[in-house]
View 1: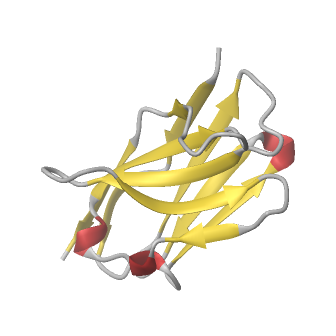
View 2: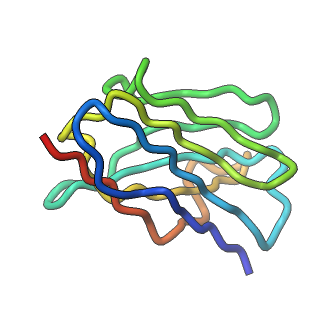
Length: 119
């Protein structure tokens, strides 16, 4: 059974930092795309950042470029999202997702971890 378990969310003041973790288990994720999405109250779920296990390439939503960094540890099957210079508009439920290389969609999702940034 595939599981993605997020952790590391919390309450932080504007300008602060948090590091989210996503521990993946239940299958081999070689060549998968691992991504972070977020959903703020009353809004649709948005893409934040993505990393490919195969080559380590990354891609970011424009609003987080220069502030967030996605990385992965293959040995631990864990993906991280380092979030710096946090803003109140970053407040959301953050989800980890995994997508097969042959799909455009993401096949597996975690339950989410809450990030709240106070002004």
